[in-house]
Amino acid sequence: MAAFSTPVDVANRGLQIIGVPRIVAFTDSSKAAKETNFAIDMLRQAELRRSVWTFATRRTVLRPIVSTSEGITFLLYNAATTYAAGDVVADTVGFLWISLRGTNIGNTPGLAEVIPFWTSYFGPTIAQVWTTAVAYFPGDMVYVTGTPNVIYICVAANTTQTPPNASFWHVVAGAVSSALVQLSPLGVNPPTGATTRNLYRLPANYIRLAPQDPKAAANVRQSTLAGMMFNDWEIENGYLFTADVSPIIFRFVADLSDVPSMDPMFCEAWAARVSVEACVTLTQSVEKLNTAIGHYERQITMAKMLNAIEEGSTEPELPEGGGGAPQGQPAPRGQ
Image (tube, rainbow, N blue to C red):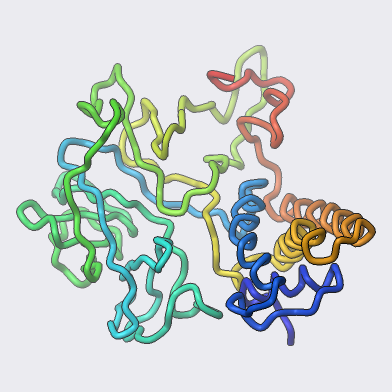
């Protein structure tokens, strides 16, 4: 049964909409391959940022940057290396992937159907020094004092289990940490006091913020707010500033690149967007361009409608597209 499995499938569906012959791979010598290859990932990211897509929504644990926090450098993927479940690697363009299976060898992340071997990595890129004073969550990244070049990922919730401990911690193959270097005031004396704000680095492959408590009520009753309280978060330059304290279970839309994990209606809209952007270059036809635009508008509307049904009733801090706060609610700070 035909289905969207790879970015080439999406590109070919876009070419089909405007009547251009399909390609075999983005490395083909055809003009269609060159044009779609240039645009495919740009348009995917743009479309992911349009909405809080349920299929691309993820949660991860974030902890504030403190004096002992270390930045993590992940190993470049090597086809000759055997990876274990939990290993994180970077591909040739720096996109991060996490291994889903043990004895994972020769399965290049990002090519064809990467699942069940790899999926996009959406966790922290900061390692905290391990301590018995912290209750760790699956996905936490730590190092042990004195050995910063060994990075452990938490695989089971624990409080006092010291790494290395295979039941609770996995050594991320080849990952190393180093002192954070900030070239702006962002990291100068990271605040920890109650009257100041904490600094968190956004997770890998972050695209946009999602409602943090989407099912909480936010209704005005007797001139007071009841239910969801708006937060003080400010996102700047890849960091989140807040008076919140560690940890934050952060809900966000991720830069998902695993095509089989995407909703088919989103893929159809993505393909239609590719057809719109490539149409004039490939066909020089205004009529086909108008057809592609109409198809895109119908598909993105339907995809967002179905996504809204699955997402259910939510109370976002700002309605999509701006326009101020929902009726009966104060605008979030700074809006």
